[in-house]
Length: 352
Ligand code: A2P
Image (cartoon, rainbow, N blue to C red; front, side, top):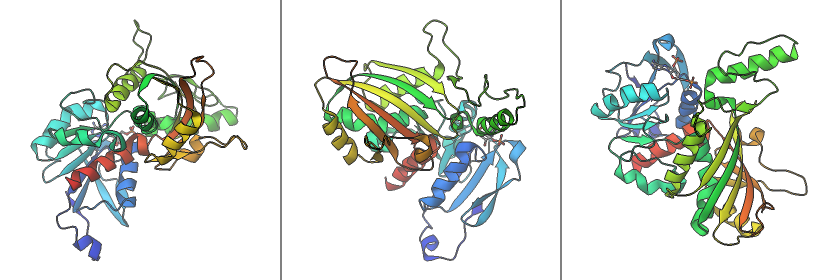
């Protein structure tokens, strides 16, 4: 069933030519934020379909003052849909994205299923919007770390080509989904109550702990799947396929915003003052860099924010050539790292 959004306002009457949008994985951590972003940004809609597994069929989710019923995802779910926002994992994307495209929808896919497919643009609108021109029905939304990092890296790279990047990430529970966020809440409560808690979603105790990212580790290189995605996708988004990038991804007990320490080497010396000016003028970035009060980007201040926070901008003392800068970045994994970026892509589709 297609929910037609009816409100007798001028704004809605003007939306007769607006798209019908489906959210696949509407009940998930990202799915809920997709709904919120569509509402908060006044995305023009003629209809909205909320899709999830049969476990969630019949659940009601609020949107613009209405309750919309969640339906089970099936092969026929995309009839009449113009834009399908997928966020139910790679398996579901691999199985249903082509079905959605055949039904006439453009798919914006938040999973990793198609991100390295040369026929599928991998888009961060502030960085490589032009790549959207060449899609064949599927557009990939990047890995959350790659999306957040490239918002800060791209303006620097455009001003002074990057020669090397080294990153360490501090990744929130939200990246592992709603169940991992709940595990963080429950295990923290149990820890504080002096009770034992058996991890169910993540492989290690999460409360008052941190651990190497839970993605599978490649036994040969020692890199985990998340790290390999961050490297490949950051290169692709920056259009720098040979750029040397090293990364260590760590899961930390934070609910929803990722942070990352970036060390970037340029071809030439770039002063912290110039980098600060470049970053301050760039879209979707907010410089938080107050040395006097020791106030720098924090997940607590990035959570719920569209902008990515960047600070601790300083010359890297580990590079005697002076060509490297160190930065600290925090961005909401569910927003710029997922739902917001997907909705921005959908907005660009409307303008074409
Ligand atoms: P459901 O809530 O019915 O399980 P998260 O990343 O937060 O774990 O969310 C995953 C999303 O993907 C949820 O909305 C979940 O729906 C959805 N999902 C998982 N498996 C399927 C499936 N087989 N068909 C459709 N949606 C699915």
